[in-house]
Amino acid sequence: MINKLNFDDEYLKKLEQNICYNKILNMADTLDVLAGKWKIPIIVCLSFKPKRFSEISKELKTITDRTLSKELKYLEENLLISRNIIDEYPLSIEYEITEHGLSLTRILMVLREWGELHREKILEHHREDSQSVHKI
Image (cartoon, rainbow, N blue to C red; front, side, top):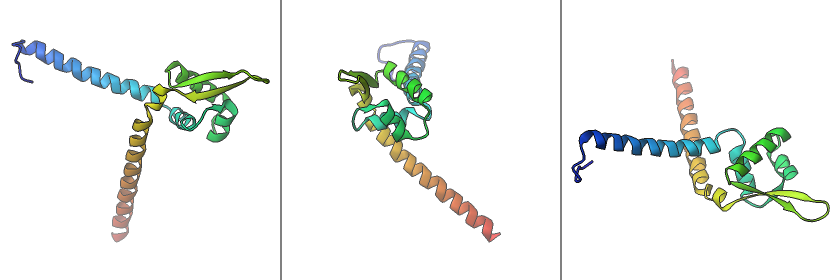
């Protein structure tokens, strides 16, 4: 970093460390919000249209009702989805992705693309390893 403002080196070092720490902290926050087996699948499930609890449960197949309920509350607390009461008889509740939740779309697409590349690279590596074992 060029020291145009004549700050002492110790101050610049602390500033640089703080900037680095804040960037890491932001990434850690993102990973924390998306961590776990079910958060991303729920977000993707709701990206197409609002759904009732039973529809989400059916679409995700192996998730328990207790886990789904807990994850929906967590995503709602983090403003990624909203819980809407449908005022008709009988009353029903729908969950839908928020604008803030939709802002994850680009990130999730990049994660999916990287996952495809990573999976292929690992599979290729294992194929090469198994071929070299057979040559011995």
